[in-house]
Image (cartoon, rainbow, N blue to C red):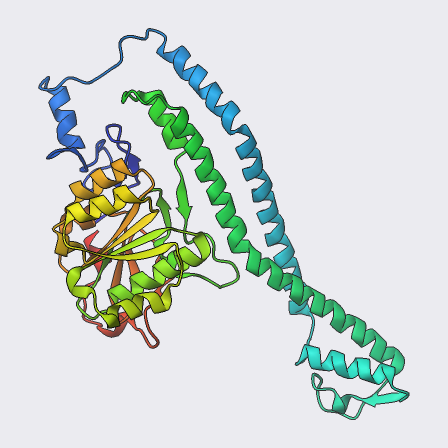
Length: 407
């Protein structure tokens, strides 16, 4: 089925992808009760329901302009910080590839540290000549080098060592610089949300403003020089997002979700609540979870109902909740929508053991797990897979029908 470009629903403000036509204006998400945004709009058009508008203020445009100016003034320092971090990131990328280009052109020949040590020892000694046969990082031949050539070679190797050290420093800080940039953008969005009037009436101008400052997690954009984390599989997702992790029994869905949680805690600083059912609470399962993640940002709780989940989230704020398995609690998308409406920064990942089309349809991303490997089949970034264990192979079952044909 052809996939259309994503849109913003003018009724609930949720990003969605039209299913049948690019002309589809409203999403199928539940605005409240049993009515979807599309049904809600139809009721307005047929006169069965009135559109709530604020008629008390005749200067809507002036109010919007004033609000926009207030917001721009408030977030100006944050935007300057974002610009400064963006320049740092760009400079890091340029430095990295310049260093990489220099190193690619230099024949390092072998063990850099050992050769430096040998050359330094030779220059300290009283020997007049040194055989290259004895240098661990050169080809074996009987060419003799003088103290002068040894000095030049030592300088060259010391420069290479500095290049390698600087390159490694850039690699280790690049990820965290990008995460810092995202958190600044998130802070900017918080200011905008705080300044928007809480009267429940959002006109087109305010909605456009909120969409302008909407934050997206940069998953999949943080990969640098081939080193990636499990969350890169999620791709670029809005805050908050709803994701599904699908797979048959014993396919590795739980281990895959734990891999994602571990990297989100370690590198992104996500505060995560992992919810299982009562039957899963045993020593083996608890060991599996806590052997991977040892952080006060991660909590594992057993629940038996949707009400218990709601109470846990009311008691403490989290950035992500993982529900394993989601079908055990009889959760539909309306419950997900209401949770995220109540907690605007709460992203949710549900592990599906059964075919729940309504949840899949409303998910921003679906990671399918097979034979211990998670692959993005809707949204996400299919370039990066998650291996739950060594030797995982998603395409082991060659006759399996692929999800991408269904969306």
